[in-house]
Image (cartoon, rainbow, N blue to C red; front, top):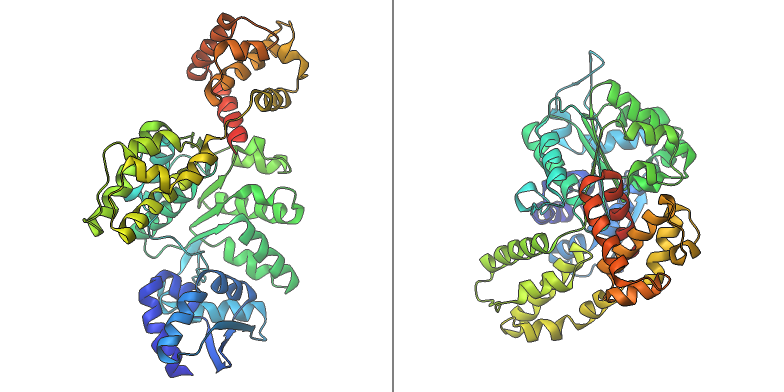
Length: 459
């Protein structure tokens, strides 16, 4: 078994990368091969679940090179205490033993095992396309990645799906580790933080959990909104946060909205998160989407120079697919695959045919009714006030924002929008739209409200 697994591991390290291999695959032990099932001993159920979700096919593929009968994997957690499991995971990684002691509170302690979630090698600063909607987030992320005093802690990145939060988080971790190869960086999702906390409570190893999380040089937590409403997890997150900040350790957090807007998050955590730098990744502009497409296309054609892309295709995609960069990149990948497999030039007609389903989905417009309901709910006013005559600012300003969003997010004409707002003249709608356009530039609060409402309506 050791010989078979050793041969497979030699190839797996090349295919998944040394970081993923050392964190997740090396702690496993092959214990049996029978009836198409490869059995493994694993240090924890968390490791088992993660490997099964992310690396099962790669492992099966390599095992089949040696023993061509493996169809699935089965994991069994070895009967050890959680503390022993942590030590086993750490011992399986020679570089973890080689790390020097990390100063904590003025004294030397043994280096802790790095149980960082896998980092995507594609998500670096080098291939992050910068534009006006994300330039501040990019600059702040680069500053944090350099290490040393930055003047703000934590760095809190928030924005809608597919705007680059996770890309920047991975890029920070990559760059920070390059600048400080002996530092301990722990990157994980809020869901993983909660899972490990619950596991530590169940196994009566909460001190090991505290020791692990509070002795890192940088803690990075993705999608922190998922701990909202989880009282015990929030309590531990709060104390972990305080301990690291008090030691001068950097924290980087991401979420889908600003701290104050996360329902179910304790006020003391909102307050703590708001003490650092809060940066909104705004929805992409046409120019940024086009830049992303051009960057991806250039990288692909370096490897596949035979693929031809006709004029106007990238501009067409940047104009039609507006809500989500992931969908935009997925559409481009589909076109690349189509062109490579069928050896056809990617023309505008080919793009329209190949991406018909994606284009139909992105053509679905938000309705004026949706906008009026969402704005009324956000500002806690009656829906009837949207159509009524009230001129008090508490009503008039939300009404103007709803007019502005109706012009931005629907294909309705100004007279049509006016009819939906109580029969108002199109010049009234035009005045309201222009007023919000000015306030978005001048008033940060209005800009935040408009950006949030856009995200909620386009989600």
